[in-house]
Each structure stands twice: as structure tokens, then as C-alpha cells.
Length: 516
Image 1 (cartoon, rainbow, N blue to C red):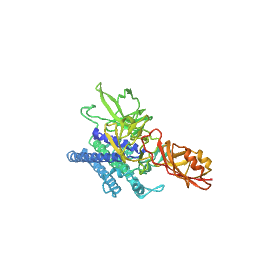
Image 2 (cartoon, rainbow, N blue to C red):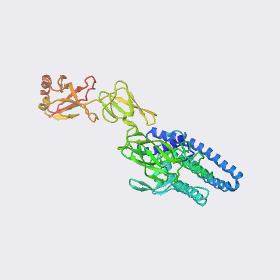
Image 3 (tube, rainbow, N blue to C red):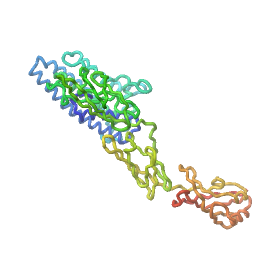
Image 4 (cartoon, rainbow, N blue to C red):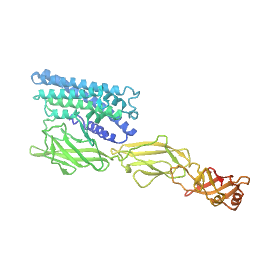
């Protein structure tokens, strides 16, 4: 995508698209899916502009072929063939995009394009390629081969320097991964969300436009040549990372090239981030330095050329994104967005790719505590609470989202005797000495309840109201009259939450004791 015809804005669009590919390593949020869609829209607009420019260049060649037949007729025929091959391949890719989106009523509902089944079924069949996948590969290889052969057969008219970059641009060789080598088609398309595949196909259409632009420019005599010579107004620096985004702790690896990729153009000096770069490959300065902290990082410096005995400097001013390396999956139960009234609810709030200090979360009862993304929610009245989260991206753009949580009260506790609930058997001598408690069974919070009173009923005796959690004299007297086999009932068990006496706990369920 390093074409001299592309504007600085268009180059940044291409770079931003590549940056989002790395984010697939993380759980895809709705914002990321939308970002792919918006990037696809920009690429489509960029391709439309590139098409107009390429058509104008082709028309220019046609005019020159008429005016200067001996010099330009053969070049125009080559350009026309390139245009035919490119349009055929571009139309095929457009057909694939239309097919993949055929089931979508709204082609701009990007947040719903998180599935990969349609692409996987079209491209893959078990460990083999399906018919659609094989055809897709054949089309890419066919276009790459046809264009490269056309250039190599006409090397006196078209620069052979273009061949390596075209082959690399449409390279389908196996890709290296942490687990070894993986087939290119699987590496780029298998299991990816639909919107990323659509954007990937649009990016390939951009590569087609770039290839046309480079060849047409070479046929016209070279876009890198200028009567004014080397100057800041005739060249632009382009940052080409080895991959679009880097995890914190990694080294940044990539190249910086001038305008169109030209192996013959070598600077006398390259300075990047105040350090001189001495490794040059194919006209590019090879970079290798720590990627830095999470966020947007700058690459500044200059290319220096000696022209007419004087130094000419071309500024380097580019950026790249560092995102946090994922260390866990994000899993949530959609129906379990619940916080409990009366207790501090611990929460973790973050936005992937945005540092914690640039994330703000607000809600009634929400408080930030120590730790990355750590909060405590203490809900008040009402049945729902909405947590609003805002994150500031490296570009300055704000991302906002919200989530509703249902508010529930602490469930009713269960009455217990000697840590037993429900139906218990014991001698009446043991019952007289027992403590009555209220406990929360299967509750996720470790809460302590203190019993403030209960009512005891012995068959044939009047009910006895007791304060506290132990039997008083009246209760013991009633228990003493109980017979073997009688079932004593303890009910109306009242308790309070230790540490929060203002919250009213519901009465605990009754416990029954069979006298042995």
C-alpha cells in the first residue's frame, strides 16, 4: 500500500486498517466490529478516488500513444492489459463481498457481523479448501502471476523493481505462527468475524488499485522523478510495520520508506527518534526498538540526501498503536447482570486497547478502588443501575458505552441450629443449650448475620418470644415439658447484617427440631 499516488490521509487509512487486524487476538467488542465497518467505508471511498486517478492516467497514456506512437503505443497496450486484469479481479472480489453480505438486511449493521460461518463454509471443507476457497486462492495467484509475467516480459518499459513488491503484496505462502506454519487462507480468514473479511477483501481491492497506479506511473516515465529533484514536496515518508499493532513489552519492527517503494533510492542518513539507523534494505530503513507502553506512539526523524553538494531533509512523522497483551478471556452470562443492595459489589471495568488511566466509569454508588480497572458498586434504591464507561483512544476520539444491572436485595436467610437447617433431631437437653442462627445458603458474598431474636413453639405449650440467639428461662421451661417425638419449631428468626445495621434482612426460614 506504499503508493506515491496516495495522499497522506489515504496512507493513514490503510495503516489504521492493518492496526485493527491485530485486535482480533482479543475478544471482539461491538466497538471493534463497528471500527472495522467504518474502516471498510473509508477504504471503499479511497478505492473510488484511486479508480478515478487510475482511469485518468490510463487516458493520459492513450493520448500519448496517439501523439507519440513510437514511444507510447506499446506502453499503452501494457497498461490496457493491466487494467483489464485488474478490473476482472476487482469485480470478482466485489462479487464475493456481495455474496457474503447477501443475508444481511442492513449492510451497515456492523455490530451484527461477528459470525464467521458463511465465510468458513465457502472457503473451507474440513482440512481441505472448499470450492470457493480454492477459487479465491487461484484468483489471487492468477492475478499475481499474470501481472508479474507481463512486467518481466516488458522489462524495458516497466521497472522490474515493481515485481518483488507486487508478489509480496499478493503473497499467499504459508504464514509463520507461534505453533509453526499455517496456510495463508486459514491464517487470514478462518474463524474471523464477517466484517473483518469484508474489510480484508476491500483492502485487497486497494492493493489492486495501488498495483495499477505503480505500473501506470512507471509506464509514464516514473512518478519518483521530478525536474526539481529530491525535495520535501515530491516525497512522503511511509511507516511500514512488520505487523499492524504490538503488545506492550514487544519490540517494534518495521521499515520507513519514501513515497513509492524504490530499492534504488538510498538516503545518505536516516535519523529515527534521535538515533541513526544504519540498516537499509530495498530502499527502506529497518527499525527494531521497544514498542513502548500501551497507546499511540510516535516515530519522528528524517531522511537525509545529498543533492548538488547540499543536504536535503525529508521529515519522518508517523505513528503506531501499542495494545495490551491479553492474558485472559472475557466471559459473561448475559442474564446475570445483577448487583446486590446492602453489600459492596466488586467489579472490573476496562476497554481493550485503552489504558486504565484513560477509562472513566460512572454510576450511582460506583467507586474506583486500587488496582487496574477495579471498582466497588454499592447500589441504592431502585430496581436498576446504569454504569456508563468512557475511554479516550490515542487519536483523541472518545468511546462511550453503558450497561444496565438489575438491583436485588439480599435473599432470605435460613434458620439454623448447630449449623443445621430444615429438620433436625436432637435431645431436648442439647436444644436448651443451642444457639439459633440465620445463614445465607449458596450466596456469593461472605456476609455475617447476627441473630436478634426468634420465637419458639413446643407442642401443647404457648409460643415463647426470645431476644438474642440463645434460649431464655421461659424457652428452657417450655422445652423441658417437651416429650420424645415432639417437633419443636423455631420461627420468626430476626437478624441483622454485621457492618451494615441499616439494611433490613428478611426473616429467616423456620427450623424444626424433633426431640429424641
